Amino acid sequence: MLPTENRLRRREDFATAVRRGRRAGRPLLVVHLRSGTTDPHVPGESVPPTRAGFVVSKAVGVAVIRNKVKRRLRHLMRERLALLPPGSLVVVRALPGAGDADHAQLARDLDVALERLLGGGAR
Image (cartoon, rainbow, N blue to C red; front, side):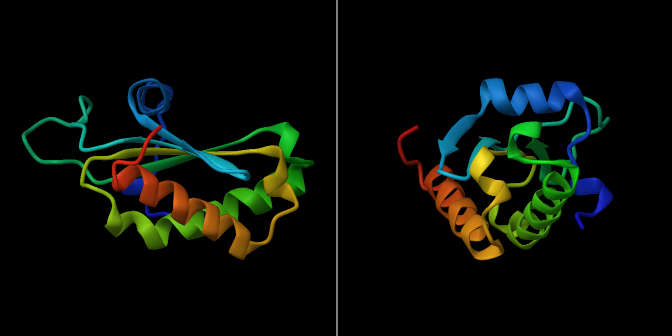
């Protein structure tokens, strides 16, 4: 599970990451990254921690499948938070095929998408 300080919760933060961030699409998921932003909700000059949020729609499957996909994605992101710049906002959107994918396939797609976003690859 992600620590509380690393969870993306506000609707505005999800919208900021999706609208103003970079995007990398893969067959199982789409990752939106807004790097190094400052959090307007936190007073002071300190850089906020990297925060991640997940979007898993009903197209992925029934509630049990959606929750399984969210748990897997949270676990995978927890291991990768240190790779991202401080203050980043990350939104991982699961696509319909994610419900049938195993842990290794989700990890591979997430790694490729993050590498593409951090390496400066094309949109």
